Length: 461
Image (cartoon, rainbow, N blue to C red; front, side, top):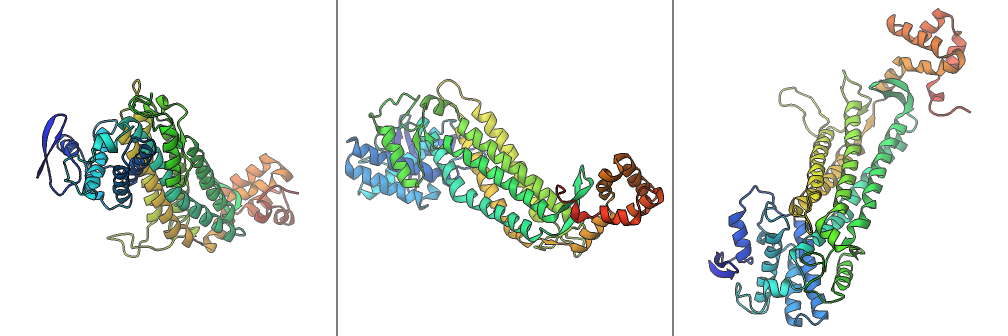
């Protein structure tokens, strides 16, 4: 162990750790659960520290050697070298102060080591005076929240959604000529093609993807430079502009200074919007996954209109059973995302005066939702959608048995007579043709000419 000091006195810190006194105190004071800060967020925060060191050097507020050592230490964190040095749980100060100091201390001690100093001495690099210069927890943490969310969307979720939409679109084209019965209210309806059904799924994903993309504008505004309450105390003029320039260059995404730093520290509307858009995607996935497992239900006593890939045995007691496990996985993820959105909405609404103090739980849930949705979409596409096959025999049987083909007769004999035919067929267990001929409303030739599923797939000429 080594002795370190903070404002409250001496603290013993493990000798092999780069973190310092304030992190050690947090470990002792917040033994709550096991939910730690996501690595995406830790790396985003290290990126902010790297940018701050560079800007402070450019503004003449930081010695070049110290700035360069801080940058190098930050780069190592961004590369994932010191993941085990960030042990804190999210259940702590609502601003994320202990988290911010954890990052400051690790960077400072690693920078001290790089410069040949003694870890824990705070010389020549101090976690507050140098690593945290021109910053506060209150502006760096929300800045990192936005950066982490943007990068997670662009580098993870975006690709998964593109692949899923394409896979559904491919199936829509593959199944474009396969006619089946449509269903509304879980009851038989008029015919559609299996391709039309899948085109709807692809469009749902596209709409949700577009909604998520719309949130990038708000997320691209950063409150960096606002420091403690949004005024920018202890920064030099131009610090905020230079910071967003550096962060943009480092990430490849164009960030801007928040239009109002007071709002950006005390409220989190852009993150609420993102969470809502993620919930929109989740809702679309719930519909699609449920439809897929209903369409595949059976294999002999259900709808069984499509065949899913057999990925693993489905039962520990029933031999030969195969379950729609990918759909079940997706729907469970959706439930978690719904819960995360509720948490984010509640937490983001709790700002008081100049600060919202629910930041850790907000970013934890946002990043978990992005990660779960990306992984779920990728798995669903690879393990389910891509391998779906049409069950032609059952599709034809269900189409032939449907009473709703009678709808084609509406314009020829009227709704009331068509309904009479359908009800007679249902009650007497007869075909539509038999019922229609017995009632005398159409001839056999007229029925064959008018009740054609292939002519019921769109507007007439």
